[in-house]
Amino acid sequence: MTAQRRLVVRLIGAVVVAFFASMALTWILHDRMTAREAYKLIDGAFNDVERAIRERVDRRMIRQAMVVRDRLHEMVGEPWWGDPAESSRRLRALADELMVNEICVADADGLLTHSARVEEVGKLNFRQSSGQAGEFAALLDSETELAQPLMPNTLRGEMVKYVGVWLPEGGFVQVGGYDTCVHNLSRTAVTGLTHNWHVSGEDGYIVITTTMGTIISHPDMAREGGQWREPGDESYWRRRDVEGFPVYVVIPKKTAILERRLLVGTSAFLNGAALVLAAFLVGIVIAAYVRAQLRAQRAKEMSMASDIQESSIPRTFPPFPDEKRVDIYADMETAREVGGDFYDFFISGTRKITFLVADVSGKGVPAALFMMRAKSVVKSVAQTGKPVAEVATAANNALCESNSASMFVTAWIGEIDLDSGIVSYVNLGHNPPLLIRGGSPEYLKGKTGIALGAMPGFTYAAQEVRLEPGDMLYLYTDGVTEQTNTSGEMFGEQRLKAAMDGRCDVEDVVGTILSAVRGFGEGVEQADDITQLAIRYNGAG
Image (tube, rainbow, N blue to C red; front, top):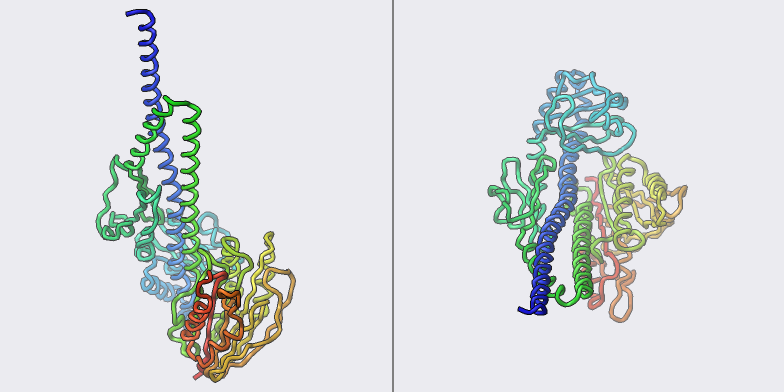
């Protein structure tokens, strides 16, 4: 063999060795990178599912605390309420009825005055305590709710979850549940939570089980109720316990393996062609992957935001089945994934119901976030029992704080006295509602104040209208009247009034108007949220 041929052979051998060394290194690095990215996606998925589970569990426990708060109004007037032993026994029975383990009542100074555990009465002052108990002192100075995660109790060591709600007369109610209690109360709320959740495309998934391994949420609904088996080495996966529920996030390795082989083959070709071209193509692949992940993540976040917003809007009708003096029906059709409109109704006194419709300036996520804030502020103030004018004034001042985006919300807020039919209301830059009397609709004109969040320090004045039995008020946002057709015409107030003529049922009114607006705008995309609320007064009898 000549020296020239030996040189060629050596060069070819060196290239082959370098090629396979490069491939081996690429294989190893890609294997590790795949695992790291997979676990990063898994950690991100845990953050989302933890938040969703805690919100549902907190909401379920707080609901029990609110039931206790309502029942206290009946207990306080009983002669046995001042007897620690008897009141503790009654609270123990109430705890059993509500399927919780502990009920405590603190007065305005933070002293534990009543408890399902009689031995604790008078021995604990929340304002002077630290740790878990000390956190509840915040309820003594603010009208809000507080929920702690499931954690070991500092006194007894059991895993326990505490929630608390403020009392209008001062103090608060605290409800506690051990892990078994939390599971029993929240299992239905968590069941099916992850049906449409995916991790790393369509292949990764999230499973929620009981402590005994029974599946309560799985992408394959047929597997729910079965026994969970931990994945083997064929998947990347991790487990975390959230509020006592074992949660598993799983990404099968088969997808990563296919991507790895494709990358190795492509790298072999590019190494033989040109390193510059390889870098260019890899850059394109990475950019496309990142864009796809960002799009998928944004779509998921928007879907979650839409679910969270939807869950905050009351959708159960009739909302007060035992209350026959009024009928209420409402609906909201958002123009985008999340909307800026909202409606609400809730009991604000012993014989009063507050109801409202509102429209936030702007669109998309910023409007949705401001909408959630405005809804929470108005409801928290109104449930203190203040008149609607003071509610509007306090809510306006609160929304003006930290409002760097200069957002505002128009609203029509009314409070009806169920015995007299008198509605006290304020119009905060909103569309005038329609008053339907005897089947004939007329716009309820009156003074209009500025929108909430537009100017701090503004004082609102309330107006009144008396509803006779059979009268109805119809509230709406400008998505109804400003819907256009193919000719650019708007639906307008006159068409709205005409479509409502002769209607007297709340659900019929809302459904008829929605059908009329959709029929008018056929062929034109919905440009704004369409929100409606109808309330009919049936009389005190």
